[in-house]
Length: 71
Image 1 (cartoon, rainbow, N blue to C red):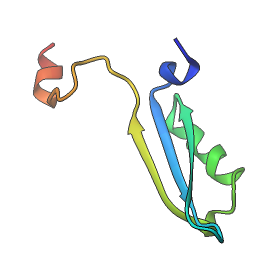
Image 2 (cartoon, one colour; image 1 turned 45 degrees about the vertical axis):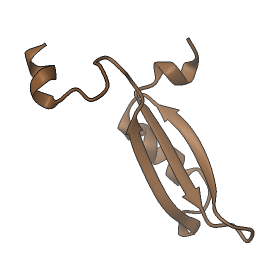
Image 3 (spheres, one colour; image 1 turned 135 degrees about the vertical axis):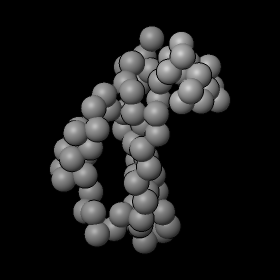
């Protein structure tokens, strides 16, 4: 298993560059780690978008809140 597969969250940040937008991708375990990525990363004034998506698959894709609660 790769380190990325072990992390719960995938963070994709898009920044504006002279030649067009570019994305950076990071994997984190805790949402609190997002602060370090943004504060110590590229200048947030050039940030276009920040998306945080769940990276894990403990339940089948498409599971509902009710199905997970009943599991």
